[in-house]
Image (tube, rainbow, N blue to C red):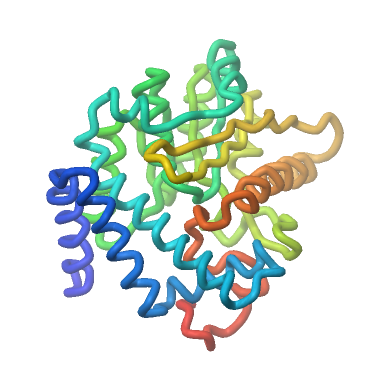
Length: 305
C-alpha cells in the first residue's frame, strides 16, 4: 500500500469513527466549512463539477456557475457527513430522514411476483435512500460497488453498506450480473447507481445536448428477468429531510433486437435522470468526466484523465 493509499484509508476511517459521534448541528457546520474551503481552492474536482454544471445549465453565466458549484460542494459534503453518521442513526431517524413521491410505483412492484430494479444517478444521498428502504420499508436489496484502491477502503465501504442492510457485490469480476439476475427472479430488489459507465462499453445516450455513455445493466436485467425498472431521483432542500421521486416504470419495447431495446430503455433512464438533475443541479455529485467529448479531450484543463 502506498503512502497516499494509507492516508486515504485513514481519513475515511476517521470519518466513520469520529464524525458519527458529533452532534448533528456540529457535523452540518463541519461539512459546510470543508465544502467552502474545497470550493475556494478550485481543485480538479471543483473545476470538473463546474464544467459539468455548465452543460446542465447552459444559460448560466460565470457568477451563476460559481454559485451552483459552491452549493454543489456543500451538497456533496452533506452527503459525506450524513454517510459517516448513518451507522449511528436510529431506525426512527432514518425513517424520518427521507420522503418519497410516487412511492406506489415501488410498493406496487414489491407486492408483485416480479423483481424490481431501482436505477438512480449520483444525486443527493443514495445511501440514505437505501437505508430508508431497508429500515422503513423493511426490504433488503442487492447493489454493486466499484472496486476501490486501497482494498481496505473498498472493504470499509462494503462493511458500511452491509451494516445498513444491503447486499454488496463487487463491480469487477464478472459474477455480479448473474447474481443480480437470480435475486430479481426470486422477486428481490436491486438498486444500481447508473448515470456513469465504469466499463467503457456502456450505451450511448443523449444527455443535456451531447452524448454520454450509461451502463446497460439495468435495461439488460429488466429484459432478461422481467423485473420492473424504476428510475429514481433525489434532492435536498433547506430541511433536514431528503426528498425523492420514484418515476414511472421504464417499459421494455415490444419490437427490436436486444441491443435496440437496451438503447431505448437506457435513453429513457437518462431522460428521467436529466429531469431530476435539471430541477436540482446543485445536488448532482458528478466530479468526474462524463460526456464522450470530455473523455476524448486531453486533460489540459487540470482535470484528471
